[in-house]
Image 1 (cartoon, rainbow, N blue to C red):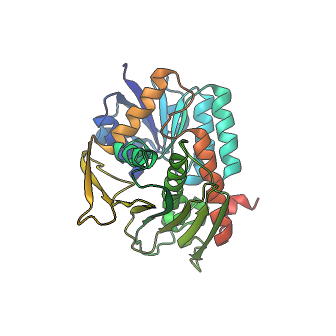
Image 2 (tube, rainbow, N blue to C red; image 1 turned 30 degrees about the vertical axis):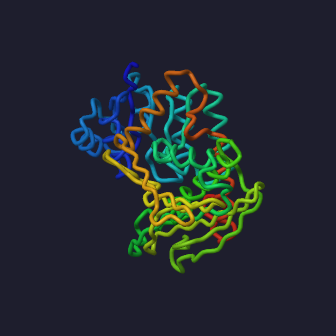
Image 3 (cartoon, one colour; image 1 turned 90 degrees about the horizontal axis):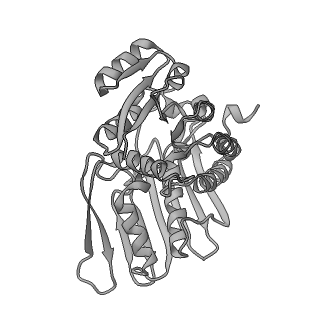
Length: 342
């Protein structure tokens, strides 16, 4: 397979993490980086051994040596730069969430389809063999009928009105930043229980706590009910410590996934634990894998090389379903972003 030449649009923390993944991948090469300032692009290029540094996003998209763009801007800018990248003929891996809401996501997907480029929302955990093993266990009825899923992703950050996480103008709050993970996991498991790639819930309820000054969700919980009877309890936070794990409860046993989201970021072995009634100890299932973000880059490159319209680990239909649930969860919490009021 010919190396896929990546352009990195943005130079924040996640851009650096993904760039390290490309460097460790089997298929990727860092062709260029684009920043709003030349000095920042130059510094990023030196650190991650990127071939070319551009002092604007426009220059990055005009670079003929870039085949695929990783969009790593703050959430509210994902839609604009994903569409502009698509219109420039670049394939796009956009950091999650794809957009602020479902309506924006539909517009972005339509733009990518019209341009004939590959588009994927960057849920890296979907590309990890641990996730595939969980799906396999559900499909094989190793747990019996799965009736309840509990999944959380949360962390504690001190309030800082200037930080992205606490800034409503930048799409801050827990639901969009990390709540999207347990929602996507619940939908994945509900689909696997029926032999499908994902399922959308028939009802979504939720509540949460909005910061009195920032107006973003500090922590939130949601309940999703699916047509097959499965119920999911999801939770997220930017101001509370959570265990950030997942548990699947079935009629024949239950599965604990201690590290579902950022498993083996630098490569290595992770474990999940299958509990069966009457067993003296759970069965440990170990999964060895390359670096997490390298897996994501390689999955994108494989889909592109195969000429597929979607990356199977996270299709655009899956993304649109996830965005619709996030809209409903935010509505239940009472969180509306400034850009959505216009």
